[in-house]
Length: 390
Ligand code: DHB
Image (cartoon, rainbow, N blue to C red):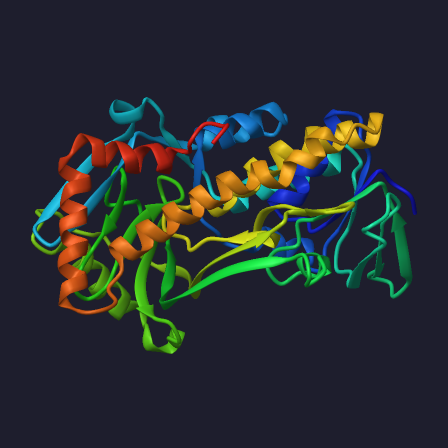
């Protein structure tokens, strides 16, 4: 097979890239190790920055989002006895939207399928070759067991943190920065109307808790749990009790419970890989960077990567102009490091770890963020997404 851009990974990064390339007249082929059902069932964060919504709109995949996304003008930040509303619209003139990553992926799959995009699911043994030349390729075994090769002008790794593309950048060139946090999140999806109008981020001596949502009928919750926690430790009753305590202590508010439809333990880590381009191989989304979920930056960063990469690849493929391709890695990494810092900052400010000294510092920091306009605006500016260029 021959194409202009071979894309490894059919998550939101890979699919949006193929959509943006097609709009510029650039052909691509997408390969994915998972089944389509698996990719579409994967539950991830649900907050879109204004600029992500604009990127999806520009890509022509926002029709359902425009109707169903829930606009949010802020968040609540709380600790026992106090709940503060941070009004992003008032602070920085921007808002965010609640629309699950699962929904973004569904919209992208249907747009690509309608356009006749070549998508190969359930492939294995994916490998990239000749990335230091201008005729790289991707080989894989397809679902029927046939070994296949895609020759292209560029290969893009949108294959997440476990995919092969990141490792294809030679060790002598690749640099990785990593942080593992000593806790995890228990993520819970429940068929119950949210008990809040805005998301609640709660610091609590028993651990962080968060109340998010997916729609007017579906709520999403997170609880800080030990890093190696077993799901069996968390029967539904214990979940609702912990959520009520951590989200409700000392505030005049109550949580409505409902049937839990999904629960899982999510590890928390930060990782940045540099460079995000080596020769004809480009990395985008989780293949290049992982953030802990606090602050919901993962999907937004992936969208920002491919919005930057699509025009750069179009120049490279259509006119041999490599200037924007040369700028991709340094430009993308500036946003990556900003979001890496913000996610680390939100995470370490809100989770229990360390001793009483750490806890007092956290509470002081939270109070400053909630009470000072400068503190609140700093959080709001990062949360709603800093406009390019950084
Ligand atoms: C969600 C997850 C987050 O990490 C966050 O900061 C906000 C929302 C979510 O899944 O809804």
